[in-house]
Image (tube, rainbow, N blue to C red; front, side, top):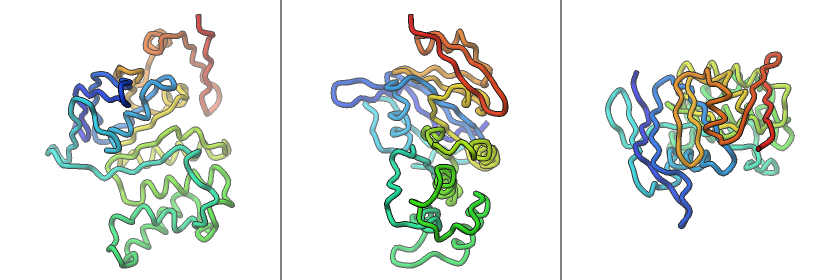
Length: 251
């Protein structure tokens, strides 16, 4: 299987505090990688390393396309909702279009083909009729799909999702994960979440990050494995169409 991203013996820190220590990870083409771990364990730092927002203290991060090493990849990014300013005066169409800013001419507008791609993504996200709606008037689920549209409109090789379950509109949660399944046919996905139950049911492989990184191929993980990597006991409970989770008390 072709690899897209390879981290080898990477360590990262903020000042004198080590956040990630000697981690290695490979993300493959068509992969759907779930990254789990406790708060403060280094999940967000790992994303920053992959996105090039943070330089590692040691180790290497390499990118590949069709088996050849390349300087970078086209990466789509869906941030946590609490980082979005819903008061900013921008429409649904403008937000999705902003995902193509790097592809348009510096002082020119979008091409006809790019406008058609924007409209296609808006339709795919189920947002027909909302093109000119300010994002401040959207529900949480609608905003989630707008931001997902912005992340995929450039047809990225890798899509990174940072705590997508932080979006409050649960009515569209099933639709959202169905959209991810469709997107995964064309792009590798890296999904960071503290919601272990959701991750286990969706992803193809799992990495548990808690300063170090433990990779688990496949998604059939046991409570014993989770207890070992999290350093506390877990139980997983599936219920209905969407998973739930139950955590025992720390000893």
